Image (cartoon, rainbow, N blue to C red; front, side, top):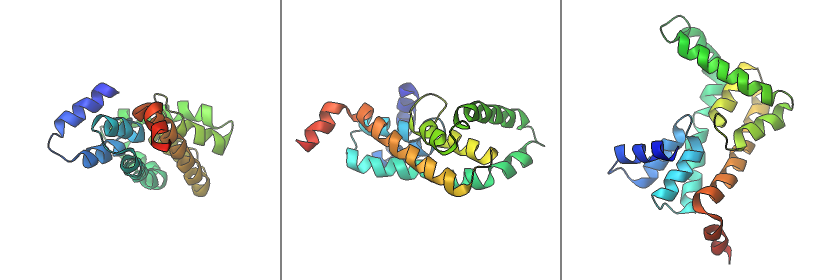
Length: 166
């Protein structure tokens, strides 16, 4: 993941660091996790990076929750059918982990930074498996808070964070 982040940082050379962090946080796969790593690499202040990453990661979520089924339906009749099938398979794979515990499962799926998890995939699962919008939003936001805490410690380092409070 760090190699991909470095590539994006290089490609966006000259763009302010905060904008790079925001763009990375918007991207599927990288999301908030990648944004916080990029912020650390670019020496963006942690307290500035956290809201930038959260906002960047949250922006696509309502669109996914509300419109992804309709978008998939339209795209299934195009040359993108293979891509749509792969996304649906990924959602089904994630759903097996989530459906046992519904809201808590979705929160942990979004919040624990493992490959293939995150707000994008969590939103996709919630939409395709017809979670109540309110439940999905609360679980995804809770997952983003959890991911933020975990990734802040990983990206900025425990000694750095502890030193800020001493």
